[in-house]
Length: 266
Ligand SMILES: Nc1ncnc2c1ncn2[C@@H]1O[C@H](COP(=O)(O)OP(=O)(O)OP(=O)(O)O)[C@@H](O)[C@H]1O
Image (cartoon, rainbow, N blue to C red; front, side, top):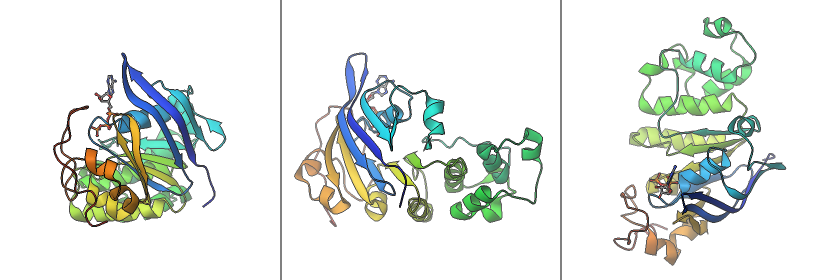
C-alpha cells in the first residue's frame, strides 16, 4: 500500500532516573500489522505514549516525512496517528452512529450530529461496514458487547482518517469469537492503514501478526516474522509462560520463571 511508515531511532524515555524505553529502533512499513509483545513492564505502552506525544522522549520518531518528537498530542493526532487504550473511551449514552459522527467531526454542529439522520457520510458508512456495526448503528453504544465497543473505537479512529493505528491490548477480555473477528478486522484495516498492536495474547499474535517486535527491559530483544521471533533463543530465554496463554504478570527486572514455549508451533 502507499502511505506513511513509522521510523523510530534510539528512542529513550526516563522516569525519575528509571529508563523505561532504552534506545529503541523500529521500522514499521506502511500496511504492516506489527505486534509489540513482551513481559509486563517491558516498555510497550511507554513506547506508544512517546510516539503519540503523551510522554517526553529523546531520539527520533518519524511518520513519513514528519518528525513527531516534541510535538503536542493534538498535533500528532492531526498528522494521522490514532490510538486506543485498554479501556474503550466511547460515549455510552450515544448511539454507535453518533459516536462515529462526533469522531468524524466534519464541522457539523452538535445538534446535527445528535439528530438521527438518513444521510450517513461516506467515511462513517465505510467505518460501520468495516467494523461490522452497520446493523447496530442506532443502538446506544453502552449496550454493545465488549468486543463491539472495541470495534466502535477502532471505527472512531477510521473516520478521523487516521493512517497509523496504535492499539493497546485490543482483545483483552474478549471471547474467542470476538478475538477472531477482531483479528479479521485488523487484517482488513491494515490493507490501507499501518497498524501496531500491543498484545499479551500469544495465540492472537501468532494468528494475525504480519511482523513482531519483542520488547524486554525497554529494548528490542527480537524482531521479525512470527516464526523468526518464535525461533529466537533470546525470546525463549526471557519470555514467560506457556505460548497458548497470556503472559503472566511479572515485575520488571524479575528473573524469568521458565524458558518460554513461545517457539512451540513455529
Ligand atoms: N509515569 C510513569 N512513572 C514512572 N514509571 C513508569 C511510568 N509509566 C511507566 N513506568 C514504568 O516503566 C516501565 C514500563 O512500563 P510500560 O507500561 O511501558 O510497560 P508495558 O510493557 O506496557 O507493560 P504492560 O504489559 O504491563 O502494560 C514499568 O517499569 C513501569 O512501572
